[in-house]
Image 1 (cartoon, rainbow, N blue to C red):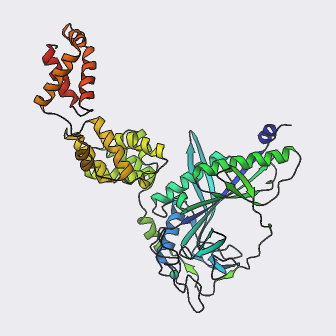
Image 2: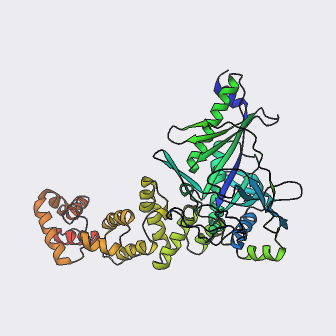
Image 3: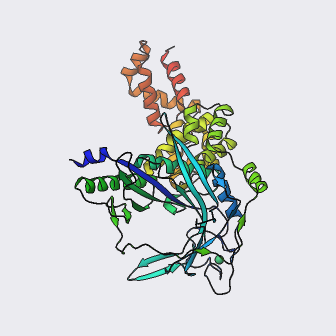
Amino acid sequence: MTIADTAARFETVIGLEVHVQLSTATKMFCGCAVAFAAPPNTLTCPVCLGLPGSLPVLNRRAVELGLRAALVLGCQIEPESQFHRKNYYYPDLPKNYQISQYQYADHPPLATAGVLVFEVGETVHRIGIRRVHLEEDTGKLVHGEGRSFVDYNRCGTPLMEVVTEPDLRSPEEARLCLARLRVLLQYAGVTTGRMEEGTLRCDANLSLRLPGTAHGIRTEVKNMNSLRSVERALRFEQARQAALLARGEAVVQETRHWDEHRQVTFASREKEEAQDYRYFPEPDLVPLRVDEAWIARIRADLPELPEARRRRYVEAYGLPEHDAGLLTATRPMADFFEETVRHFPQPKVVSNWLLGDVAAYLNAAGLEIEEAPLAPAALAELLALIDAGTLSGRSAKEALEEMLRTGRGAGEIVRERGLVQISDEAQLRAVVDEVIADHPAAAGDVRAGKGRAIAFLVGQVMQKTRGRANPGLVNRLLRERLGAG
Ligand SMILES: [Zn+2]
């Protein structure tokens, strides 16, 4: 039996565990700032360093963001939940335990039993959310030059873990589910969701089974740093397990890491053993109580979610469904669009530039809109220059490319490169006369009523002016000069 036959015979079962960094100003249990790429060990205090005698204080904002996520995911919010100590030793964990929310006996996590809905074509997928819980992040080890360093800045950063039921049936579905979760959480203002910065991290469990039978033996795949790598890593793992089963071998339950460079998963070198984390309730924190009034306030404060925004773009801005769908695909893109429209109130024009030239540049550069140095006000300035006739469409594209690359302003680039559109009749008439003199055959064709030759002459004028001539004006001047109607 071939591997493909085996793979086709088996059903793939995937569940996700997603760690989300909450968008708070300060850490989970202390007042230290949360910031990306600050100098090492500058954002610490006795609490997040785990010094004796220090006591944690729960960050209310982190709880509120966790509750927002729970509401968006349709979860049941537990009226009372408890924090626990997860005990283990590792150099990036100075307390020797992580404060988390473990589920046992009558200690539920923050929220349970939700559902994530997403569409693939005509098919609606409903993926169960097993739990949403809060915890703190660890520090970071930095390895190099035969030594290892530890940076505690990240230690105590607020995290939320979202665990799905094993309802996903293919690597592609897993990617789409994660993409949907990310969009919802971004819109809800829960996280920036930047996988490359680690504010969203995904682990996945995958197993194969014969339909109708119990779950097969699963492996856990870690270290996937983009949506695309989630799908690729799971595809690899699916094929690897199918090959083992085809040879009559057993899948070993283990943790495997995705190697983005080699495009393979590999087993960690450390020996797998069932860790005993000796969970027990955190004695320094009282139980977390969430009453109905608090939930109602969080619900009332929920930001606009993607579907509502898409509808608004169609109804209020008059955009086609297609544009509205693309613009709301990520919250940063939608925010960028709205901010640009505030400065330049022609939504369809803004949409055309964002989905056209800007999107093409971002795709080619492998960037998201929020990673490019372009500001909405700068794009609006460029569009206003085109609108005022100061800049031709072609010159605008040239300026935009530099704006996206360098973050410089439109006006500045236009002045420096001499891109201002030539709409001065006398100046253009001189160029038109030159072109007519240089191309007597084409000029003769136009005089003889062969209208199509005029496009060639317009092109010549544009070339001579490096694309700066006002094309409408050039066209009129040529017709006047050549006596064409
Ligand atoms: Zn601290």
